[in-house]
Image 1 (cartoon, rainbow, N blue to C red):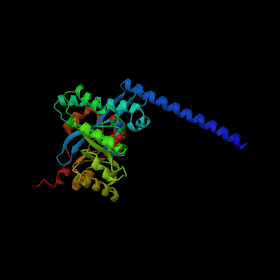
Image 2: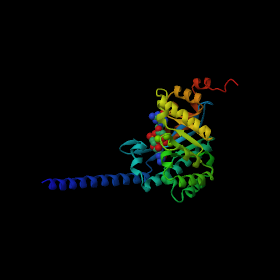
Image 3: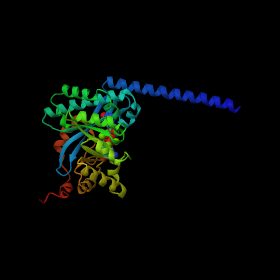
Image 4: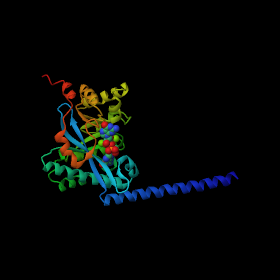
Amino acid sequence: QAKQQGKNCFHIYNLELDRQLHAHREALNRVEQALENEEFELYFQPKVDMQQGAVFGAEALIRWRHPERGLVMPDDFLPLLENHELAIRLDAWVIDKALQHMENWQSRGLELQISINITARSLQTDDFVLQLYYAFERYPATKPAYFELEILETQALSDLTLTSQVIKDCQSLGVQFALDDFGTGYSSLSYLKHLSVETLKIDQTFVRDMLEDDDDLAIVQGVIGLAESFRRQVIAEGVESIAHGIALLQMGCRHGQGYGIAKPMPASELAAWIKEWKAPAEWKISDPYQEH
Ligand code: C2E
Ligand code: MG
Ligand code: MG
Ligand code: MG
């Protein structure tokens, strides 16, 4: 009797697994189709120098303009692509599109540092550097020095030797690197000396809660100090209020990005936003060099 039941269970489990695999395949096909139909779009979130009150760049964040579901956020479809070659194709699309926007802004006199997010798997493909080189050839007005690749700290550690080599190869083209969601990697910090990234990007969860939570404040302060010791730049994401900006400036971090400055917006709105934006007066007062 029990044996019989066990058998049935196994049968049901198999059906469920089968259904899930099928759904996953369908979803992947749908993403592939979306790529061909140009349903993806890049939004841009400004990056500012809070001390100078100046916009110096923007991060490209992907959106899926789904014909039925409306605007779909990356967390709703990127996990599907994990460990799939489609993720690599999507990253290639992002590079091309971001450079296209960059060239367009460039031609209108807007020199911005444009950051994109790239998965470590893409970075680790054989011809990544060559593909990046070709991408710049397609958009000859863009300057590699103004292009930044953000990789997740957690992913950068997956194959440290390879990743650090590819980073160096890409840097010889002139591009820059940032370690995204920095502080969430839980690992020994000694790996930092092997990664020649220019910038550490403090994870937004620490920044968001640092005004209420002393532990988060300590982490933010720690990352800022670490960046200083390793002579790297530092930027805070998750700057949700003027108070966040003041605290960051006091700790010596002048670069910020977050809803308190601007939410990600369609590319077509960025130039007008930059023209209008003024840093809160409170940030200038907290500028320690103001009086000199
Ligand atoms: P991320 O690169 O760490 O980007 C920051 C995320 O936090 C973005 O979410 C952004 O909209 C959001 N954010 C920015 N400021 C604030 C704030 O002040 N408060 C809060 N609560 N959130 C803020 P988004 O656009 O949903 O992207 C989520 C993640 O998806 C990104 O995290 C990145 O890891 C990934 N991603 C986005 N676009 C791409 C892409 O084109 N390619 C790849 N490979 N990954 C991408
Ligand atoms: Mg990012
Ligand atoms: Mg991040
Ligand atoms: Mg993130």
